[in-house]
Image 1 (tube, rainbow, N blue to C red):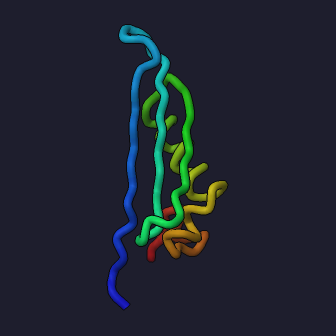
Image 2 (image 1 turned 135 degrees about the vertical axis):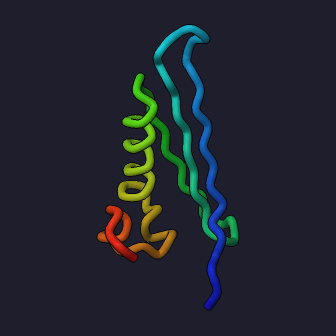
Length: 79
């Protein structure tokens, strides 16, 4: 079997033009586009927000299963 490409997307925006409040939306889809998983979050630290949204997308929304990752792999261990 070959490598499958999974469509992904991220949108980050400030709630107010001069504010620190951020809104992040992310998605990952199956290779055929039939399954689309979405997650979002709000916060003021972009790195923490991105990490939290990615964790939610992978572990709570089923992204790790969609991507075919074992739980240890999704936590950053060697694949």
